Length: 107
Image (cartoon, rainbow, N blue to C red; front, side):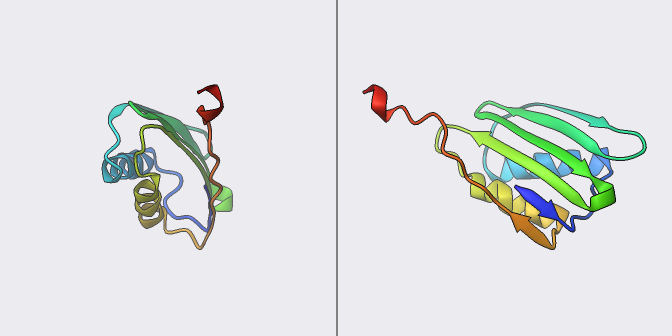
């Protein structure tokens, strides 16, 4: 997901809460969050979930947030997206869904 015109992109505390809220909304199982605040600005990090991970990178100078949700087990990533949209309030979103690991050809 790419969020343009996003709000609150330079606060580690805000980004952490946004990730926790999104993970909770989708009923993912949070294992660990690791975030890094860059100087002079920007936050990058990853939330490790039992279902895989959620990564985030922010560019406050462009009001831009790049997010990846990688999840298995049929969990609802759309609920995470809805929560993240509510948190960052982007003016524009670009969402790409990529199906990974389709094992039908092995059976």
